[in-house]
Amino acid sequence: MGKFKYEVVERIAILSENSKGWSKELNKVSWNDREATYDLRKWNNSDEKIGKGLTLSKEEIKNLREVLNSIEI
Image 1 (tube, rainbow, N blue to C red):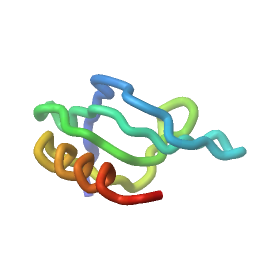
Image 2 (image 1 turned 135 degrees about the vertical axis):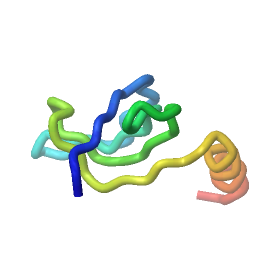
Image 3 (image 1 turned 120 degrees about the vertical axis):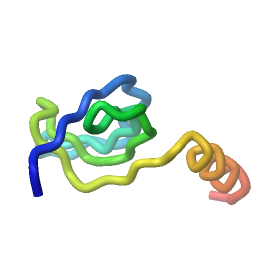
Image 4 (image 1 turned 30 degrees about the vertical axis):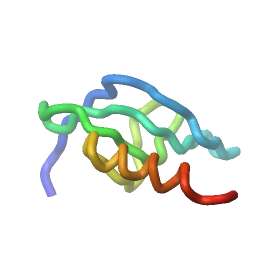
């Protein structure tokens, strides 16, 4: 797999952090100069390394919000 380019357009939330300097974050990220999408993944503290994650469109994030609002925790 070739190199890819990313730009964190908006930092929305840090959901958790671990003792090794990695944080699970929800951000808006532009991948390979495309339109930014919502992105949930682990980042190291210098943003040089990233973990596997999940990208969501605006419609998908709206649907996820509805689902999360409907469940009892």
